[in-house]
Length: 355
Image (cartoon, rainbow, N blue to C red; front, side, top):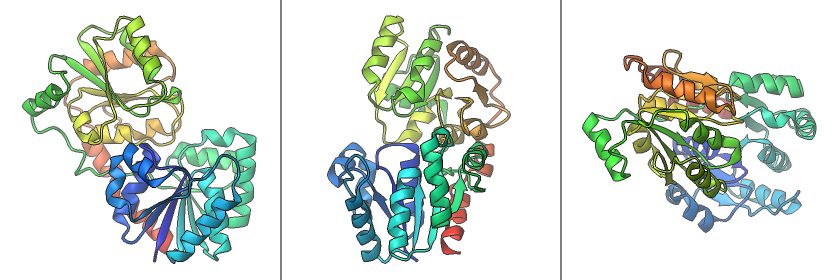
């Protein structure tokens, strides 16, 4: 069996990282990105380089594109693809149509968040596609499954996103943690809070920065990632006189080393599906805080994690302070290894695609 995952774009992000992880586990599978071009994508995200022979870019223009469907149909045909796995509504439309034109009947579609289905146009399109294409619907969180049911009337099965718990493991010693911090000039930090993700409005970093002003000087924040809000966030940190406590580290390829040097992790998003970052941090034994949006709270270890109201700096600050003072005996790693392994996720998708 040859399968193809179809995504909107291949840029650093949770869905894209998940797609790459699945491709690594599925021999002979490929990924097709509706948008973008190969060299630009690889330059922006070097992790793609080893897979250049298994990833394809269609360069889709803005708006609906018949030409993109034709290109996609040709790639599916030339690679003898007999099962597709689409992520999100754009790939659902293009991938579903192209696969149907090629007579491909096996179609798994994963929804990674439910908020876009609140849009009447999106939910209407999805209802029509569900009837016409008859895909196997998957939600990556209970909350997402509920949103699919409420907006389209369709049932979906839940397959939680999984991570590589061998790659994401705790730091071996305090000396190693200190060495990792030394590489970033953060060795003097007493309590280091971290957040990883695109620096975009929807990720809520503004509220996390504002929370820091309500915390003791012993607590600092490290942000891993880049995005269109980076300069605005740096200006905000300076305006609050926090520039010495908030560190912008830019894009980091080996995020496991970022997590290992932390004392706590926070994902302050305004919208989410089922995010990977809290899973990765907790697999490294870093207790985590998330905004209670989408399925984010479902990622948390019950004995160490905290979910807070979104866009509320005071609530974030209280949670961070509480977690920073908590005993260290509550380890989140066993919970992650038991519930969110990459093997369980891969096997579940493999069974759907080969059924």
